Image 1 (cartoon, rainbow, N blue to C red):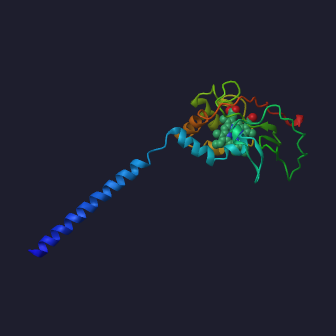
Image 2: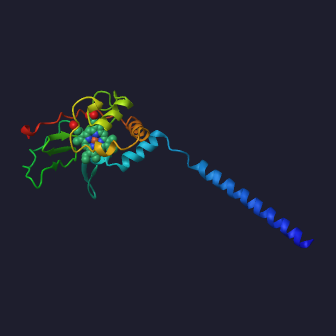
Image 3: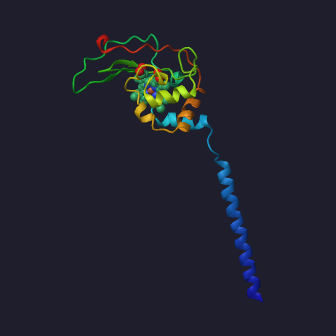
Length: 189
Ligand code: HEC
């Protein structure tokens, strides 16, 4: 009789514990819900080097760093740069100190303003145009070829959801008016 009572208590206790475990699981999944597209896009942009090229670099206390007050606003309009160093077969590419102007066999390219400014950034773009640009390597998916070193051949491997999330994040950041110059052909370097 005593043994039966003990067994009953033990099984009741384990049933209670099991219930607690289920509740803990349920509450831990409730506390980490799926990120919103903007949160997911922020994570992807931070992990995929967009700031390395699209945010102008400046000298910080620990050396050069992206100037986040100009987050993703592209090559600063009106910045005057000396002519790039003469390239040779071993060293074909050079980058400006801002990391926003790049010279190579393709000419000189300037990184685009990715903020939602309607005139000079991506404010007038649709999600479809952004996806098409990243997938085809053409401006807005239909214009001229997007020049190096824009790594669209890497970025195109993301699925539609992740590319859409990147675009949603880019549309959520502060809008900065900055008209990036057109690229220069190799002859103009
Ligand atoms: C290694 C440097 C580099 C990195 C990293 C980079 N970009 Fe670019 N990006 C460029 C350059 C340079 C251009 C301008 C190319 C041109 O004018 O043809 C550009 C252009 C663009 C454009 C304009 C395309 C168009 O259709 O006109 C978009 C949008 C863009 N980048 C988004 C991104 C995003 C999003 C990321 C991060 C996931 C990123 N870039 C990472 C260098 C870079």
